[in-house]
Amino acid sequence: MTRYYVGLDVHSKQSAFVIEDEGGKVITRGEVPTTPDGFSRLQATYHLSPGTQVALETGTVAFFVARQLSRLGLDAVVVDAHEVRLKAHRPNQKSDRRDAFELCEGLRRGIYRSIVHVPNQEVSRLRDTLSRRRHFVRLQAAQVGAVKALLRAAGLGRLSRSLGSEAGWSRVIAALAQHQELRTYAEQHRAVWRCAREQIAVLEASLARQQQESFASQTRRLQTMPGVGPIVASTAIAVFSNPERFPDAKHAASYAGLVPSTYQSGDREAHGRITKRGSAELRAMLCEAAHHASRPDQPLNPYFARLCARRGYKMAITAVAHRLCRIIFAMPRHHSDFDVNKLGVERGRFERKIVRTYRLKASSK
Image 1 (tube, rainbow, N blue to C red):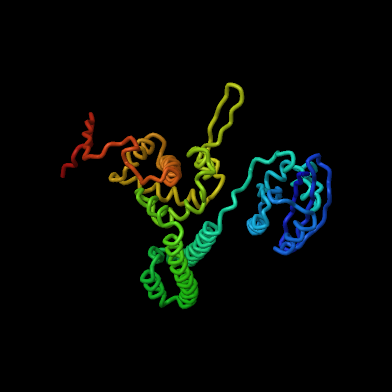
Image 2: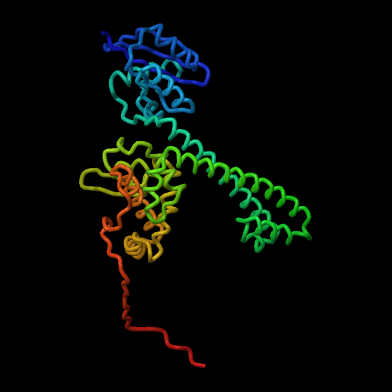
C-alpha cells in the first residue's frame, strides 16, 4: 500500500492541503473547510488510511484540528511554527499553498524536531481554566496599579499601601473625600477590581472541582511538597501533561526554561542567563514557590542559604525553582510523595556560633 503524507496549513475558515507519496511526488493539493465535515471529506476523497501522518503548525486552532484528525484515525503531527519558518525553502515567498507544501515535505523527510504535545481533553480544560484565572488576576492587579499611579501623580502616594483587600479600598476612597474627581476614578477601578475578584473565585472553585474529578491523586501528591499549593500543582499538571514524554528531569527543566543558556566553541564554554523557553506561567509559579525556601524551617533552605550568600537572592531563587521543577516532575512520574530524605539534608535543631574579631563599641552617654 502506498504511503501518503499530508501537509495542512490551518486557518479559521479554510485550510490548504498538499498530499505527497513516499517519493515526494505531489498527488494533489487544494483547500477544505476547517470543520469536522471538511476533514472527513478530505479523508474519504483521497482514501487516507488510518495512521496517515498529517503535519500542521502551531496556532490558535491547531489543537482543535489535531483532535478532529485523531478522531478520524489520522496521525496529527503539530510542529512548532518557528521551526517551520526557519526550515522553509523559500521563507520570503509565503503563501498558504507553499506553507502546506513545506509542512508536507518536511514531514516526509523527517526534518522537524519541535513536535508539540497535544494534551487530552481534561488537561486542555485545566489549561483553559488556569489561563482565564491568570487573565482576571492580571486585570485585578492592573486596577491596583492604575489607582496607585493616580494617587502618586496627585501627591497622595502614601494612601496606596493597602489596595489588596476590600477594607483597603474603602480606606483609600474615604480618604479622598476632599478630592472628588480622584474619588470617582478610584470607585470606577474598585468596581472592576471587585468584578475580577468574583470571577477569580468562580474559576478557583472550578479548578477545585477539576482537581477532585480528574487529578485528585496527582494534586495531593504534589502538595506534599512544602511551598506547593493547589495553583502551583495545577499549573505543573497542565504544563507537563504526560511526564512520560520527557526522557528525564533535566529535559523537563529545560522545557520549563529554567536551564542556563550555553555557548560552546572550541576551548571556550560559557553559560548565561536561563533560556526562558516554554511555559512562562510555570516558571513564575515555581519561582513563587521557591521563595518559601528562604524560611529556616523549609527543607530546601540549606541550598538556598548557601547560594544566596555566594550568588545573591535572585540567583538562589532561580536555582531553587530549577530544583523544584525537577522534583515536581519526578514525583508523579515515579508515583511517590515528597521525601525529605532524598534531598541530602538532615533535620534537627542546628545552631551555629559565629566568632568575630571586631565589633562596634557600645555608645556611651
